[in-house]
Image: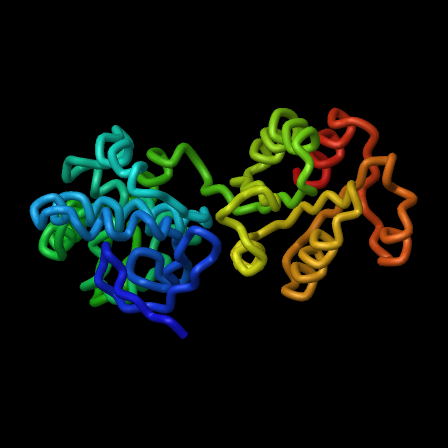
Amino acid sequence: MITKRCLFCDGVVPVHSIGEFDRYEGCYCAPGSSYSIHSDSVPAFSSLSNRIKRQLFPIVSAYIRERSDSDERVAFKFEDMEHLANSSAIPSTIEEKSNRLLQYLFIRSKGPQDPIVIHQLSESYNLTYSPNLQELIYIIEKLREEEYIERVGATFKLTEKGWNEAAANAGGKPLQSCVVILADDEEWRREWCNKVLPQIEQCGYKVRLADHSSHEIDDDGLMQLISESKLIIADLTGQDREIYFAAGYALGLQIPILCTVNRSDADQPLLQASGIHPIVWEGTEELTAILQQRLG
């Protein structure tokens, strides 16, 4: 197994080369998950001055953690960093960074006073886009004094006040992760992206579209994506055997799954032999209506 030091958090972790990308697994940037960086970008990051590294690397680490904590697959190149560093979505004030910590606890809590453990707190200042542990401790103490949170060691609880504040900032209930798996067909993907996926999102799901044309999702990455999801929707149109395998993998993990198929492929031999009874749809309007009824 090849191990390397993460550029952004200094953790030494397993690294797998997948095409033009290197996937770092389980570092402090993506605990319990992974991120991918273009192999040609590593020398470019390493050649930056120490001053720029101190400014940029904590932001990159926090960006990776925030996205991976939201069940997103992160893959980037050196050229992406200019946009990231100047993005208005990156918190800059203590208030904005405090809201990031409230959101982190809110997403993981069932309600006020639900205990949440932050493992390796000394390496978790990327939760608030902070440049160091000292700033994270300051934010924690500020929220505690304002009675938004309670803390005992590494265990945190949102107070009623903190829960209400986080809920208001989040705009309601956190979305559950949902992976939609389609055959590698541009027409199907466009149809689903424009008409089907928005309706799934309206039912309370954060949708990630998995298809075989994406360089960041290899077979192992798709399996991990499935394992981290709350719902799988697999469209069997096109007789793609890899999608059947992915559906079986989700069933083996006891993850809820909905299978769909266009009526043009409903009588395919592979489907008949599998014993799967999918939702048969004629057009996307019919499909979205059925999915809304099932997911609602």
